[in-house]
Amino acid sequence: MNGSFIARLCAAISMMLVVCASAVAEEAEYVIRFSHVVAPNTPKGRAADLFAKLVNERLAGKVRVEVYPNSELYDDDTILPTLLLNSNEHFAVMAAPSLSKFLQFSEMLQVFDLPFLFRNVEDVHKVTESPLVEEIIAPLEEKGFKALAFWDNGMKEFSVKADKPLRVVPDDFQGKRFRIQNSNVHAAMIEDLGGMPERLPFRVVYMSLNKGIVDGQENAWSNIYSQKFHTVQHWITVSDHSYLGYLVVVSNPFWKGLPEDIRGQLEAMLREATLANQQYAAEEAISDRKKIEEQAGGAKIVELTAEERAQWKQATQEVEKRFAGEIGPELLQRIHSLLDH
Ligand code: LMR
Image (cartoon, rainbow, N blue to C red):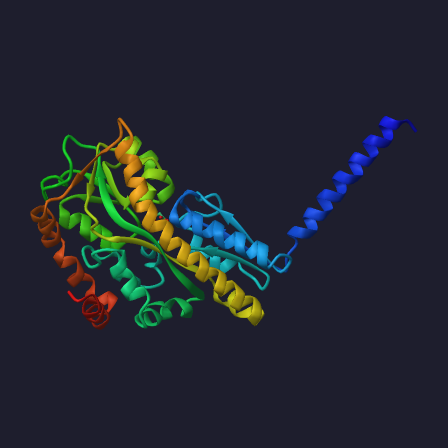
């Protein structure tokens, strides 16, 4: 046996030990796959990563959270049914789809899609941090979901590829197609503004804008920036017309089956991630707008005058009336009094 053979053998053994050690470290009794559709450097992506980091450090060997961003695992259309089907006692899929994507499971959640109801994210928090929230999420629990936390992205802005920005309604929307999420409220809003809605999953939005399949879209600043929508659009109108936020959900049977102490610790870590998410969202709404503003050759940003904004509001005021029956007139009334308008 020569020296170099012994050295190679030792190296191989120590490599095996490292591999074995990391396999042991990664073993866990419960595994949660957190699937989402946005980039890691967004308020949702960062909060999901933080939650995974906290869990993997504090509950090592008991619970492991793996994060799959950018629709790598499941996309908008498949995530919610899959989450229910694929979970068992020791394995669960967790997700934070936008509130608009729960239509199939809750008509009440459509309230968060209404245009010009929430003036800003603080208005939304008045609802999500009120006792009303228990009523809003109750139908989801009956359908097999455990609703764990509301996460923010921010207010949405419109963008378009056109000769001029979207200012005058309906003229500037006419003849143009706008990508929307799978939301009946969004479809009604686009029609009332004068445009044509096109429901498309998030993962194909950049391609659809780039190829001219749609002329425009509406989204929060961090999604516009991280998906580079501004590089294939000419104008962004600061419309702040509605809110983009998420509900973190997991299978209810999985959640209920967890030992109580583990469930309590996971809830506490989700609260930490939720606070961080709110901070990331507030920061990125400013910083991502600024990055777009500073990027030469990208979309130009225009502000609406108070008069133009009032016209947009008036053009879409029937949307709420049309959906009041599905959302619940009483819930709407209580939200209006909570928001004082
Ligand atoms: C969208 O589809 O535009 C958003 O819901 C994507 C997301 O999750 O932020």
